[in-house]
Length: 394
Image (cartoon, rainbow, N blue to C red):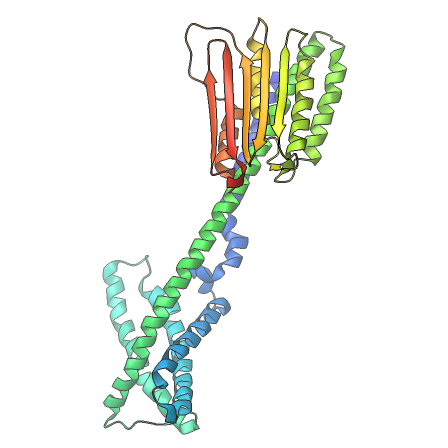
């Protein structure tokens, strides 16, 4: 009866896993795309002027203006006029650099065209852009003079001479805007990638928890089924203890952390539930040395090692089964040792980790930077040792 339940349940778990990872893979198209839409070219190209990206160019313009202030400070007599002149020119270059970097450069470098076609398109586009950066800025200067917003402080022998002088200013703006823009986008991309990694790790942790809980439930139901099949009077008490554990798992393990005291309580309840299956021949020793019971642990992190000791240790031991469990936490170093009896064999086979141990290893990889999980099989004893530096939480 119980085994017939496990197959659809495993299918449900598999479906849950697919849905969790599908959700994680679509993170960048959801709230991450909304938060970092100024680094997604497709999003920025929907409108001619993207507000977030335009704000970036405004800040770059202020930095560019401050850079030129150091140069015009050499002319104290005309400092105010030169400052207003630069403001007028930077207004033009702000718009021009936005169009160049946000529209012209992406248009030239489209991947759907061949390199040869891109070169053919780039030649006229670059020529037009250079015309705007040179002749266009010179015309913008004349407009400012006509409106009384620009003070002509220099005289040019010819129009090409004036265009050449404006070209120096415009070309320096291209370099400055391009470098700052590149650094900004690189930083934002790193932020988005880091956020995406955190979201996917959280999704994987949620999946591991959702897989561990049914795995624990199936094993416990198998034990109750064995008691019910033998018509044991302890079946009712087993169901009562199981309901207590499930209540704890439902209401206390929804967060990222629980206290060590709560973890100890759930382990003790699980041991008491498992002991109902055995007579007095099973010896269980559970002791601990903990400096602060309020320290935080991920919920049910230690349970797989205890569960493994019962399912693959004492359940398969016919003579004097035992389990020794010791937990110590001192100076933020957790050490959890679980020893259980096994049948004596002539050869020691490599450990084939079940779902519980495999999930535990993956959770440790996602949660801590400094940890060690050792499983050592022996001829008559199996030892699992978990060491975690709790201060190394990711």
